[in-house]
Image (cartoon, rainbow, N blue to C red; front, side, top):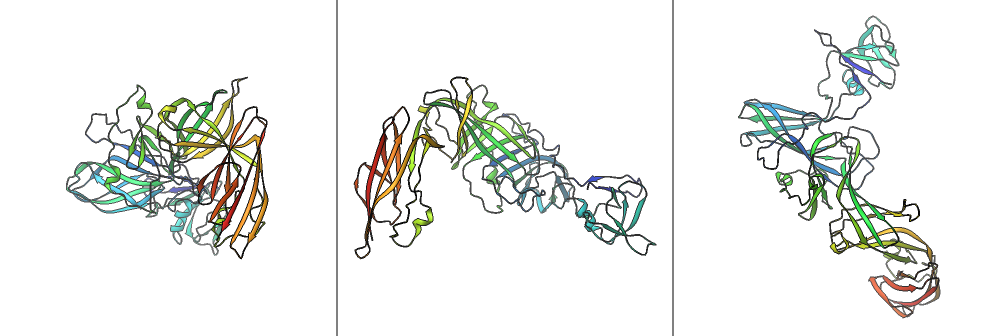
Length: 522
């Protein structure tokens, strides 16, 4: 039911109508372009946003005005510079259209005109929005006017219930029983109830010595505004090289639009408690980086920032509410060499099996095995490979160009963690079609009195490809922490306390058999 609310002013009888359907919270005009040029030292009006990346969560922030199941769980620091009028003495300032996902304890107000003699006495975040249910609740047992769904005369009386989804009860003078209204088109009130606001609003009580216009800097942290890296990796042909492009994907469900904002992205795992209080040190202006290319101002400029990496966009951009926006993160790289890596995890024992308090002597334990060989794409993130840049955590989608019709086909995707330069990157592509393996146990002996057991396995790896492959066979030694591999057909490398890796080279169209025996003692 779409209802309207009217407010009758006693003299002019002007009616203001508010729709029940919740519209997006539009940013105010004060969120304008930060017009300061590179050499300006004078502060200017505008907004800057620094966004932090984080995974998604299921439940919305408790202050969030919308009732949706999933919201981006990242956050951002918003710094707004705007002009306000202050009296000589104690006065009030209100800023509307702030983010609905704001963290109230993070709000900071500072006068850039007279910071020394301007003091904040109180600050409030007003998020009780003027909706029909909220207005009706405040007018219980008070006189209102209702107009039926087809219009017509105004029914005036005392409101007896405040549930617009049910029948409204209106006690009309002269009627022995209250009138029941299943629908209405307008609700007429003498005034908007006190305490309600039409948009999320910040309110301050401020004591100032200088009367008149001040340039104020307002800083706050908001939830439901995040970013992530999205990478596109294209293998152009049969050669083991690819091209890589990276995009910053910004998701904004914070409840505000940031118009012509100066944008920064923080890459890294920044610790945050539930509701942090932010000091001035968090918002230190970053030094300007010199552009190395003619189009550098159109892209992000990356630099180290404490233990993280900061990406600053060289131009203003608008971040609309309820939107997903993509901006190129770095210049595309080409001719990046890679290799395919085949990994066979024969046992894949769940982690909780490893946490038992003693050795496992049950002969059926760990017998079900995997038959699939995983294939990874591996490359080095260094300058020699035409990369050598910090790669923020994100989604990697891999395509390969068909040499016949030159069309790129999707062949796999994976998530990568934050990866510094000069480190290896592995992207899991899926399971190999032409490389197969099977693992079976061929021996098991236990001597509980002497506190030892032995277990023997055979791993057969078959290669149906026209070229030879190398398969890394990972074996979990899950029965106990004290072990020793005795006879083994292939050399192995110890990966962890209970995991080893055998390297098996399999010729084209051939098969190789790996055998080993492990002895546990306790």
